[in-house]
Image (cartoon, rainbow, N blue to C red; front, side, top):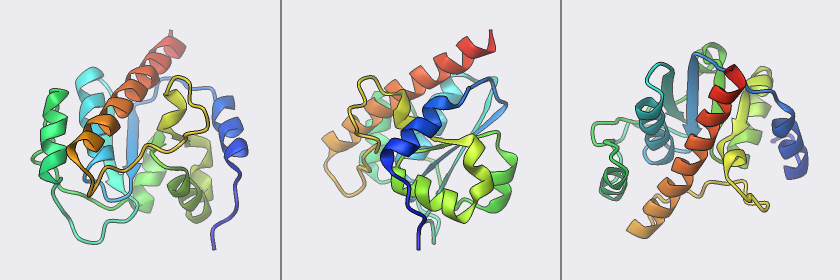
Length: 171
C-alpha cells in the first residue's frame, strides 16, 4: 500500500527545494510514450549541454509513441517518432541528479518504493503558472489530438520555466 502524502505537503516539500544546475535529469511518466519523451526531447533541444533522459513507471513491453503524439510533437518542432519506451529502474533513480515526474500518484509511488529519491524528485507542474491545485499533467494517451496539443503545451511551458529556474539559480 502506498504511503499517504497530502497534495499540500507535496507542494510545500517541492517548493522549499533549492534548485541548482545539475548535469543529468530524468523525466518520468506512466508508459514513457507521450509525456516524458516529449519533455526529454524538448529539454535536449532547449538546453543541449545538460543530459536529459526519460522512462516510465509502468512499462512492461517497449512501445513506440502513438501517431497522435508524434504529430502533436511535430507542432512543437520535436521529433519523438523513433522513441521506444523504457522502464525506470533503481540505477536510474540513483544516478540521475534530478527526477522530474508528471503525476502526484507516480510521485507517491516512487517515494514509497524508493524513499532515497525524495531529495531529488519533484513535479514538473510546479513550474506551471497559476497552478491552482492542478498538480497533474494529464496523460493524453488514448484521447483525441487536441488532448496531446494541450498536454504538450503545458509541458512546454513547464520545461521552459524549469530551465529558466535552473539557469537563474546557477548564476
